Length: 274
Image (cartoon, rainbow, N blue to C red):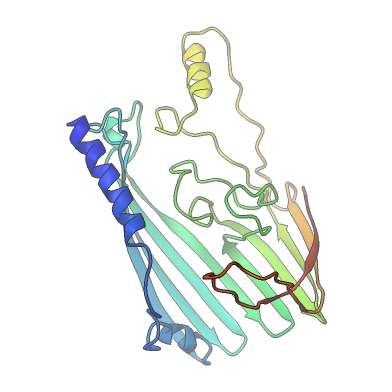
């Protein structure tokens, strides 16, 4: 069984790379972005969503799943001129919860995001519950401290998926190549520890909890921020873009494609405080 499972995993991995290249323009028909053009129109209401099935197994023990998370998310967007309202609801079922040690409910439903944007050419304002990306780094971003990590599945695909939305107010003012962005959280949010028995519970934390249950020592409750408008968090970011400059290219070897590109040089100063 393990040999068959590993062989299937290798075949899927090879198949994905072998067929990753796409010839031509898949969006040449012009219909793929019809909804995006509709968002720009005034008095717009769009209702959508998606369903996701993410199943994770271990090569060492393929018969016991790590996670069988099935998720449905419903999203709605209303827009009128420069004002809009976006909301999303999420419901999920964890089919492997019964195999985890401890008491874990497989069902979960909550409000994902609900915020009011005000969007103009020079001013952008967001108010509500939102996932706010901070910084430009991909993957591990040391400046992305606004949204706490979702410990239910911290290895999800995409940086936005493994973060939990928070209540905040943010605004951006831009003009003449300079923009300033500020964000304010009425109550700071921090990463929660994975629950006992969770597949992503660190071994060190699991050992500490085991020793606590054996009576070797006592762990006090963490002192987390829980006071609205007192345990606040805020930050600002200044971004300066210089005029576009051509990128100097050196002659490429024969047979290689050579393409002239232009880019902007950017500088930014950013920080967080709480």
